[in-house]
Structure formats: structure tokens, C-alpha cells
Length: 103
Image 1 (tube, rainbow, N blue to C red):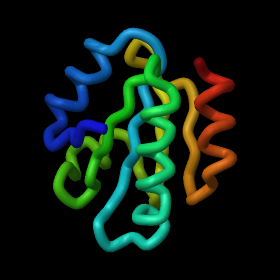
Image 2 (cartoon, rainbow, N blue to C red):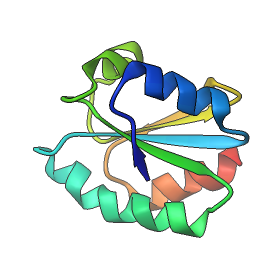
Image 3 (tube, one colour):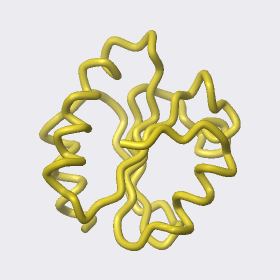
């Protein structure tokens, strides 16, 4: 999973990825985010046809602000650069359901 460190990098990732894009909004200090990171990495391996990215909300606040991140962890799902779904909270089963539903 590639870390997107700038708003421009985020925009480029959405523009250049065909199919489903999953963006994991996270923070180093968040226990639920640390809990979901291995799950997100597992899903990135399991669903190789889906593009997975991470955004640290403290280091890339411009992107977090643009995406209106209000809780952590937040997963946003995009197709053709448009948000199609989201998930807030640490739910491994819910996360995989969103991936399979939005492919």
C-alpha cells in the first residue's frame, strides 16, 4: 500500500487508477488504525485488482480536509475518481464487504 503524502499525489492516484480505489485514512496515534493496518495490507494482497493507498491525516491534512475525514480509521472507495462508498471504524468484515460490493 502506497502512502500518499500530498494532495497532488492523492489526485494523481485517483486519476491514474482504473477500477476500484481504496484509500485508508489513518493516524499513527490511533489504536483502531493500527489494528486495521494489517487487515488493509491483507486485503491489498487478496484483491490485487484493487488499488490501495494510505493517507496519514496528520501528515497530509489537505487531503484529509478535502475528503471531510471526521473519524478514524476511515476507508473511502472510489471509481473513476468519484467516491462511491465509505466506512468509518475498525470493522474487518465490514471492510471486506465494502470491497467486494464495490468492485
